[in-house]
Image (cartoon, rainbow, N blue to C red; front, side, top):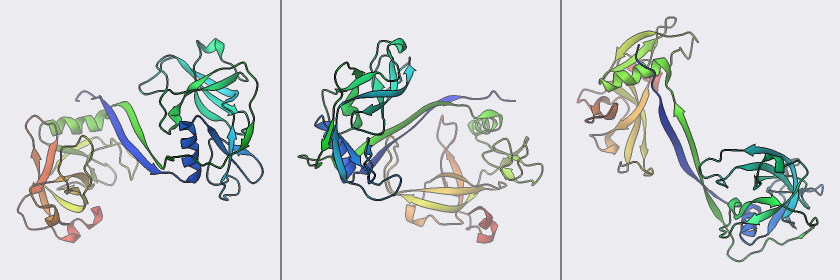
Length: 313
């Protein structure tokens, strides 16, 4: 049995969204060192503000300026800050109900240690030196001994309002593929494609999962498939991905390898993107030193009949 593999894996993408009038006012206000909430029909002030009442679903735009001071309602100590967290020294995650608000805002508290934090403690906003119209314009909260602040109506009008944001999403973790997929990856390194057959329904799954997704029973019978296969369906990619050195447009397809009962996905090359079609017969192309195929190209065989792959579309 091959060794179980593991490797660091990063999933990262920028999430871009436009802002409605309430969110635009809230983020622009942070840039101007102003905290805004929104008042619901029953008089509650929500911070962060939302554009629709969570109880009645009615649109709400009654903005309220509230104080930059508040009370910790609950907290958790973070002794080991991670990359891109608000502070690079140990801190507390806190829910803070700002003075004049009825809900709590999640942020961080700069404190010397967990003994210095408690539910009910008074805190205030520490503003970032450079503000751009984002939640990070609040650098953190810090302990505060002064009086409670109040609230007042606000028209939400600012010069040069923020109308959109880009939020980077990133997930860092170590992936261990397990017995079945480790064997699959080891076979790919030898330019072979190996799946596993279900002992009950006799279907061959590629990549193998160690269990049949239909029958729910363990699989351990190895079956070599392909390497040729048939394009079952595909899409044309017109947007260039970050850090991916492939010119657009290109085609990404589901490919049913000969002998497999599950289609895998891969890029199609060696043919103009507008000539790729369902039923196209393809084979893998291996780059020197790579552990997996770089792409699939046409074999020159006649197209497969639709009935031969219709169950895998």
